[in-house]
Structure formats: C-alpha cells, structure tokens
Amino acid sequence: MSISLSHLPQSVIRCLWHPKLNQIMVGTGNGQAKVYYDPVRSQRGAKLCVVKTKHKVKQSQAVTQDYIITRM
Image 1 (tube, rainbow, N blue to C red):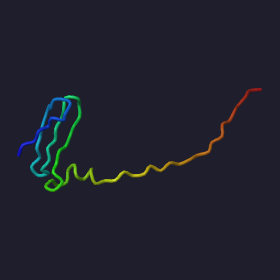
Image 2 (image 1 turned 45 degrees about the vertical axis):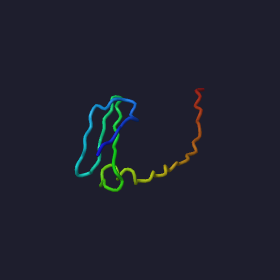
Image 3 (image 1 turned 90 degrees about the vertical axis):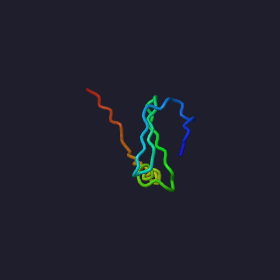
Image 4 (image 1 turned 45 degrees about the horizontal axis):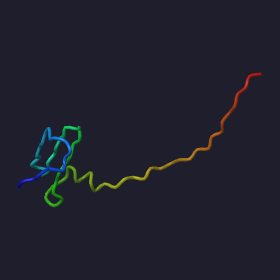
C-alpha cells in the first residue's frame, strides 16, 4: 500500500505506523500532528475521538449589582 501526503504544507519530521490500531501518525515541521486511518480496518485510537459529539456548554446567567462605596 502506498500513500502520498502531498497536501501537507510542511515537511514530515516523524512517521509511525501502529500495527494494532492500523493507523499512521505523522508529525510535521510546523508542530502539527496528524492521524490517518481507514474507517473500516482501523480499531480504537483516533476513531474514539471522531465519534464523540461535542457537549453543549451550560451558560449560567448571574445578576450582580455594582456597589459604589464613598467615604464621608
């Protein structure tokens, strides 16, 4: 199998293939880390992060009063 990573804007510094996860991890020259995987053949790893949905942030509204303290 051959994969071309021509879409990376920076050079590849380190590349690692994990045989159990069947995923390729790539570290680039600009500090980014990328994970490449096959959705059918890969197990766990990056796939666990992909299927998670974002949680809604609960916003609480607090009413505060500004106090003005003056000296007499």
